[in-house]
Length: 152
Image (cartoon, rainbow, N blue to C red; front, top):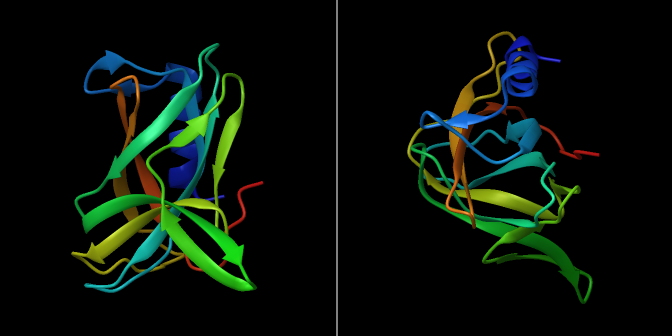
């Protein structure tokens, strides 16, 4: 496991999430990854979002300074063809998790403003802000890694 990712996870568990100086959602993130891509291309980001709250939550938006636009998407097969569609939100039921992974729910980064490169010796980090239906926002760093992603 990369040191940066381990640091993020340990920090969030030990300190609780803080965003913009305030306590926020009882949520933990694990395995935040984004695929490499070149300027002008699209790529995808993946993460596991665990809801420790007694209330249902919805991820309603994601944003990053490295893309012209960010959308929430779902991949699915239709008539034997893999397709992808934008979704308005990603529900995270109380006490459960939402797995954003290749072939399922994910975050699309459209029209990259800078190149994202996979470098195992010094992983590139991409800040992505997740916005929830409660109005809370959570920024975390996603590591650029190539390869298939399954967050189970």
